Length: 178
Image 1 (cartoon, rainbow, N blue to C red):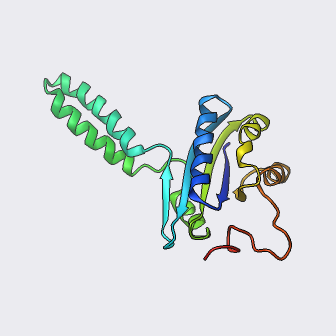
Image 2: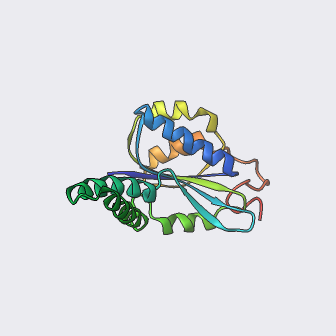
């Protein structure tokens, strides 16, 4: 079973850096993710989703290869590759794997203008090593949603969130920029 984690950051740059750091940790086999998405809300309020992997590109490449192979059987690999690439790209466009896009757009609407969030669907990880490597993001984010146990969520909040002084608005999620 996978766990969903969504962490908000006050700016896009920090969210993109966090997403990049998570992908690097996956390459080191410290975390195994099904999906990682950066959600941004610009100054005009428009929400955008930035997928780590493009299913359209992957579908086009895979479809092109399979189409070329099938085309070789019928002595026309170029036409087969073109048809396969088109079909693969179309299939990739309509395939939604990982975190539900509509859910992420709703999360994006709750961000302050100029803010961003990282959504991660985790299969498995080594929590102590992952947190150790994500030290540059300590006290820079706010946990918006997790499917963790209460204890694990509390540890993540303690790591990411900096408690604002009393009487001061939070820099993210409704207390800061509008």
